[in-house]
Image 1 (cartoon, rainbow, N blue to C red):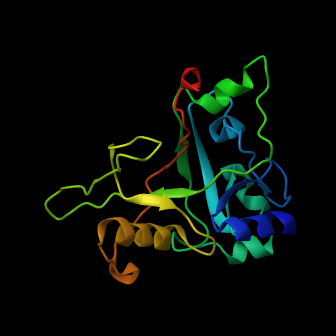
Image 2: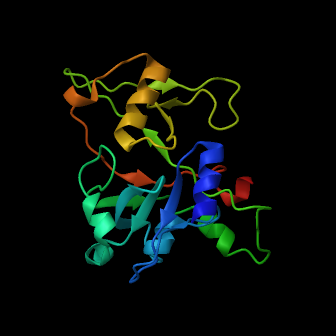
Image 3: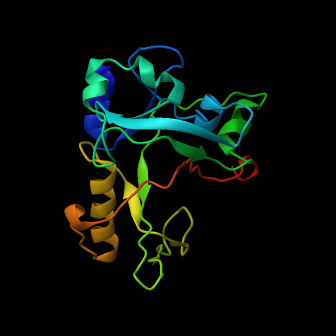
Amino acid sequence: MAAVVNNIANIRRMLVGVRAPDTCDKPKMANFLTCLVHHFSPTQKSATINCKIQDDMLVLYSPHDGNKLGDKDEESTGTVNGTELESVTLYHSPECPLWKLQQCSTPVTPSQNRGIYVGVAVLVESSDSHVLMTQRCDHLRTFPRAWVPPGGHLEVGESIMHGALRELEEEAGLVLDPRNTNTHLICLWESAFPPLITLA
């Protein structure tokens, strides 16, 4: 686990960890080629999970494992501002390229497991029911010129809310005080590029 934490510190981006079902083991860094939905729900395109930020990882685990958490975990339960979150639904496309890779006759293995980065996207709704969107630059490799909500990678040491508000300020110049901002987590989703294995 120490090696994982050191690796996170070097890249300054938070990674996804998973807890094995029916165990109290320490969470492990999710493999770069892991389809997270199929990890928890092999036959579905969505899975209801619990998540929490622990040891600079976003840890995903089955809601049925909640009663197996240790004292350290119990102390960190709470709200979206840093630790335990309510049960949420994790989605992915039925054409998930990571799942399709597992079905290939020739295995695809990266030279090193870089893990799965945690990102955040912010949906800001105004009092007159408008939603803020930003347009990606022309030169970006993934989805150039696409209209997307503000967002980006979560940095080590950040809560989901503080990472979201930082990205909102960096990308849209909008500064919100977390103490006076009404926020809630809508869902989690997997994002991979290219979005179809046939495009790789």
